[in-house]
Image (cartoon, rainbow over all chains, first blue to last red; front, side):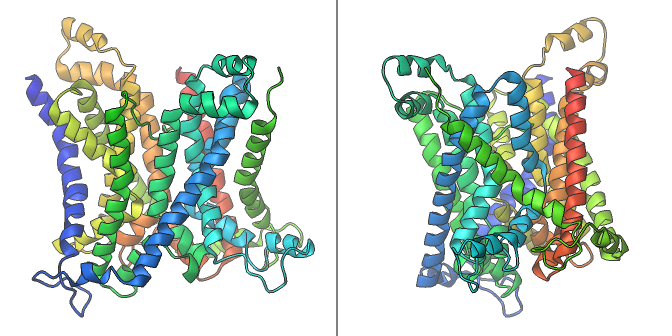
Length: 287
Length: 257
């Protein structure tokens, strides 16, 4: 009876997710070894040609850029989110909810709209360029858009709320008397932060790193809209292979590389967890 | 002992950083100038243009059809899954189940988009409303399941046993006791699913076909091929709608506590 209820309640999602997540993912790996047809389809037979072509310098450059831009974005998000999460956790209850709300609202607003807001801010006719020109910091011919740095800036902007939430969630459970004790014992503010607070919220930091780094690796819209050719990432190459060249095996091979890149940090964290004490990863909780 | 001011200053800067671009965008939606650098007085001209555009209304309709149907299906699937995960959490089957449900939450959207596209191409399904609906249900299920699971964690199952002892059938105890008590979690999950569906661009972009342009797809082509002032107006309207929804759901959540 109990066994039957378990299967009855689990089967619908198991079937759905097998059909639309597991099989499609396996298919991506399979199609990477299929030849492309001239009409944009997938041919029969097997070939290693596509996978070999990934080792060309242009792809390696894109992969390397994707990696460092994602790492930089993660680092910048952490630097901003740690003080913010700390402040929100230490604020008086009345303020805490308001501050939290302010962090959550951008999470609910359209992703495209937020990227567009930056595109028009940094536009050659936009306010930021005008201000910098007035201050004499940039010449009239300078472009603020279409740099790798622009992509990192906008990625930090869109991922920052996701970083603050897990850090806040961990900081809220942290016993701040430990920091005070450290200060009483003569630690400087930064020392007590680094040696007491940071280890205390380790789990929140790990979650924050994962929720930024993994989606950053798969970024597509941001480099597409503000990146230009010098800010292209792996996601743009995948989309180009699908929409411009219609070479599905090539797109599959690139996606397979991305899957492996995403799995690496996840497996790393799981391995660390197995070694250390139990510490579950909390994905940014839904408000 | 004085607490360092530094974290507070950074927090203020962070909030400024988060809100300034949005506020400038809202202000510019009322600016009749074609380029946003100069303020030329208050005007609703871009809103008027927006309301005259039939493509926008068509896109809104498509978006709502998909969002409502995907939310309905994913709420049923997700709630059932959350129940199974909570009730039978220790079994091996549920560990597999949990891993499957968790996957769409961590995998970058572009990977889900491309793998679904490959599957639809391989199966010979024509891209359009149906494929977008299937894709949206797939990512919404996980969010609903996680939200309802959070609610179930505080649920006391002895209430169900009490109902059964008093003669309720399994169906009655589910419908009359379990579902009403889970309702806030289910509503929160539905709201999240709806918002995610309305907002999704990347996955939709991969599995959309001709004649199935959703609002985000329309906005994207407007950004890409130039109609900036109209996007300002459209974005402001979207912001107002989501903000109202968030505040309303917060109100509801507070009242139910």
